[in-house]
Length: 402
Image (cartoon, rainbow, N blue to C red; front, side):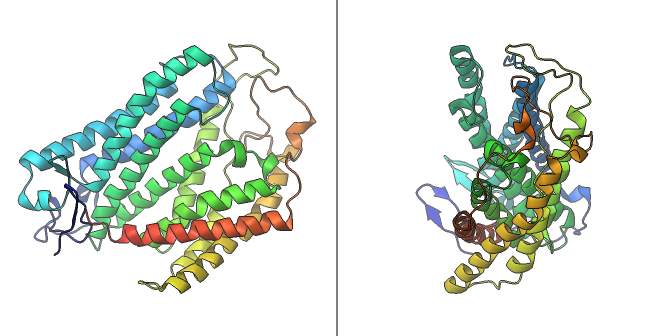
């Protein structure tokens, strides 16, 4: 085993001696007993945060009036606190009470030692906590947000994404050190699905509404955003269909939020009220990412390791083109259905709008200009660059052992 250091922090990601929890003398069984409690805590934290974010957006669209102590905010910060406390405990235990194997299997920072994913979660927790007072001050000074990515929300989003990436890395490190870790593999793809959902939520204004799904901007933004994560997850997951599994988790999670939020009665409390609203406004139905994700799995899994640079770029072009063209094939027609009367029901939750959006024919029309050949070409090019980053990220994740 070799050890590399950068500055004062050891960042070795090669295979390290297993801790007492995963030593060779312990029989390896794919059961819940092989998953430490702190990993479950971080997965719960990641889930709680995303539930809170989607709930908070619905709260703004339905009720309007906002305080720091809304249930949605509590769900967000519960997740941040859970991840920070669980990972903080893990770092302290590893540093002061861990075995030699435990400490050697960690990453050093400021004299403390712990798994790489734990450090990422701790950073995310601090960022989320710092964003709370900032967001409260922002609302008091400027009122309601007019965009998802206001300055305090950007800090919050960075912390949330860090916790979700940290959850993936913690599952990944244990997965890469075991040969029978099927449950760990599922947890990794689930964490990837939650990360996909968070990224899709951040891009809500450009990608969520079916009214934009026949314009060039939607395919350029989607091509730049999703292949990074889908290709990376596919490359790092030992499951045969890692990208498709994460996409399925993303879709199922968002569909459940659509179904649950509609069950709660609510009414606007802040003017101007331009339309009657009597239940929590749900998010838009998820993009059919699972279909282009299947195409990515087929291509990415056929790529050998290590991969020559030229072949990686050629494959990235294929991945980018496959993602954009398959997404176009399915979303072009599905968006038309979501704008039709057939989707205006509880299952699809379509045609439900903010209380301060006046009714009009715009609800059932496409907003952006027609998709052009130039726009589609740019989407494929952007998708190729995104896929190349995803290949690099996935190969890096395959080497994570700490």
